[in-house]
Image (cartoon, rainbow, N blue to C red; front, side, top):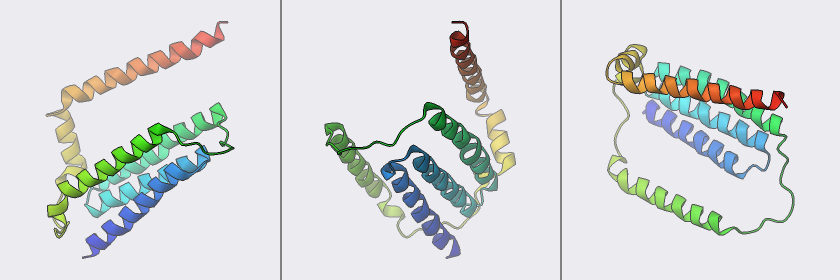
Length: 165
């Protein structure tokens, strides 16, 4: 019962963060709303007894990634948009796709409405994550590290290109 209540609390906080992310005109406030969404996701992980995933969610996403987002926002000096809002056909299409997605999720999860969230979830424990990363997902894990190194080298090349001129 308590787990279900915590799920709904964190779900409502996550939805509020997502709405704040979409409807804030300030890029900084949108980023702060995204941090709220990340914390609510960490709370959902905690309610599933996945402490490791919750800690990683807070440290990596709410911490490091959002600091990078805020640096980029402040570095680009993004200004608030002023003026009259105009209707863009892409917004209508995106709204319809969003409604279709919500309808699909309601259809898919209609059978899970009365199910309980109780039980032991081993996927969020450190041992289980490490075992899966080093056995079943070793090749994708190594490929991600190669892609990240390539992205880092590319960022250095792009940044150094401007210093030579």
